[in-house]
Length: 294
Image (cartoon, rainbow, N blue to C red; front, side):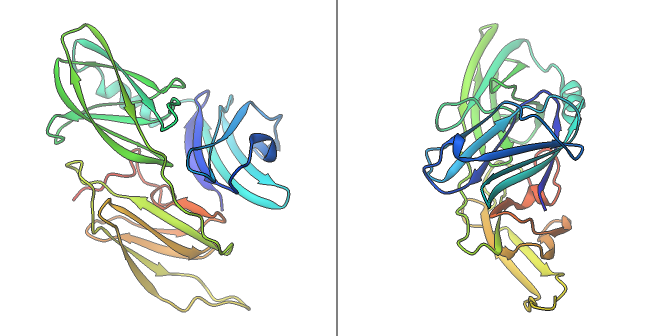
């Protein structure tokens, strides 16, 4: 089962995946399908990050429809994704409603550890105490978003699949136009050595912006025994570490019920045929899937 995401047409889709270290783009075979029809490959890039074996893949879907991307090397499957590419997303309405909140034009640029621009990163602007949401935008292909803010101090909260959640302080000065750069770090999750399991991971942040250490994730087995295999454990509980990060291995293709304890968030999902997968993306979370109300 491929990961699913809704994506805006003519904007860069950017994600990370694991493969054998030391590969270059020409080592990978990439196939693109739209509405189940093989497409002439659009322009794409695959670059290994500073973390050996973690690769950055990006391309721009140029028309609406259901896109499927498959990355492989011969018989070795590395990554795939399903994208529902649409003309407008809820972010368009979100941006419109959040609107203007000040008189100073502030350009925020988001970069990764290699100082490359990070497109499609959600930037949520809060007051300096990180208690009142003010506005939100998504970075463009240059990793930039332009806000209208009043002079003063703010807290930024950023989130995107395969990118670690990041908070940053923002000070808006008296200049009519100004710029700031925010650095984010790619989430590094070690792929399991057993090809039959998938490592599911998630990062949790409280409403005050601090890491949700001790967050508990209950996983219930809904997998039906087959003729040659039965999963006998009924329920397990995993606890996030001091950084709010949790990860665990589950058999690929199994059906599980996931509950975020202390919340009402419960989903039944099928574990994808991937080495690693973001649990919150899989559970179909909202536009900022890393934030849990406590």
